[in-house]
Amino acid sequence: MRPVLALALCLTLAAPLAAEETPVVPEAGGDMDQGLSLLGEGARLLFRGLMAEMEPALDEMAEQLQAMEPMLRSLAEMIGDIRNYEAPVKLPNGDILIRRRPEPPAPDTEIEL
Image 1 (cartoon, rainbow, N blue to C red):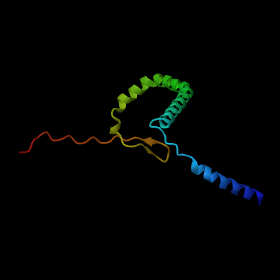
Image 2 (cartoon, rainbow, N blue to C red):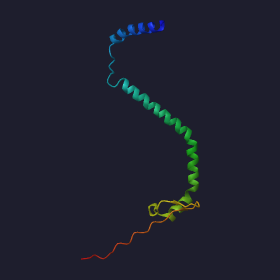
Image 3 (cartoon, rainbow, N blue to C red):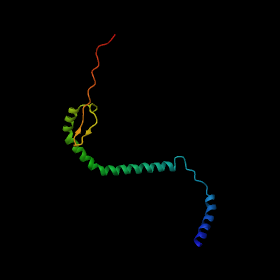
Image 4 (cartoon, rainbow, N blue to C red):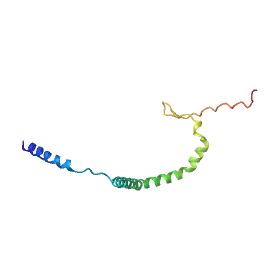
C-alpha cells in the first residue's frame, strides 16, 4: 500500500509544477530547421553506407554486362521491337513459347470519293 501512496503523492505534487511551466514556442525556423537538417544528414549517411556496400557488386555486374554486350546487341537486332511479341506462355512440358503478334493489315492506299 505504501508504493501506491508514494505514487499518488508524487503525482499530486508534480501536477502544479507542470501547470506552472510556460509553453515553449518554437522559433520560426529554429528547431524545425535543425531537425530537418539532421534528418537529411542521416539520410545522406545511410545512402553513402549502402553505396559503399553495394559498389563491389555493382562493379562486377557492370563488367558482366560489358562482356555480354555483343550478344545482347545481336539479340536485339533479331527481335526488333519487343511490342511485336505476345506474353510468354509456359507449356506443361516446360517449354516456353513467345509468339510473334500478327502484323496489322496494310491500309488501303486508294481514296474513295
